[in-house]
Image (cartoon, rainbow, N blue to C red; front, side, top):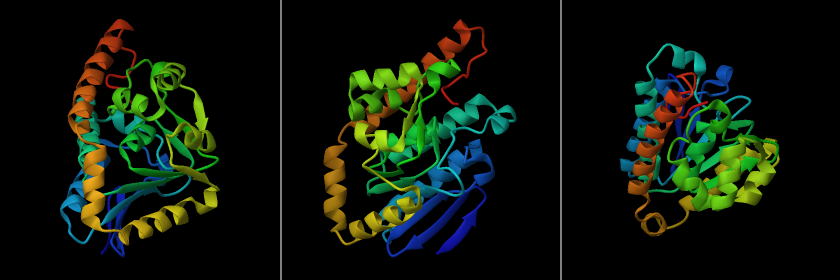
Length: 248
């Protein structure tokens, strides 16, 4: 299988379903259509018995710079909000291993979606950022729940309150990524790790993941609802000039 969907490249390599964000001219920033397309492809991969592992990556100079603000201006906030929730819940309930190989800009949703991925390989010179406080909105994509689980409460507070940049090397040190490698090796390493997982017993991997993530899906869904409500309250408090639901 090797097909191109409007904003997503989909291919299969020896049991690995590769999903590549494919808007390089916009640093793979998401349109509302791209959210729903990624959610659909994850749902298809979850039910496809030939798929053992999913590998996420981005085409061009970056993994993902968040939401496309030009596309946002042409759509409704509700479309983007529903799209974000669809992707996050597809990730949160995905039964098989998900690997991401990321590079360049990893901003906003580009970063928060990775909190729901099992193994993340980052380029050491990548630039991560959770920019919500600076933008005048709430955290998104269940990150208010997941970020503190991954890096701890105080570090999560520091990252969300300061909106500061984090290098790929630091992201690995903090636990946001599993490992950091030179940028020219990141996609190769992602494929290598994915290939190793296909040699494992699929039911054992599914079982281990289910045990590790037991109860998380509902917690994440609840966090998304709280974040959406908070974003609306923040927007009203600052006179409607902020983003309505936590995007960059």
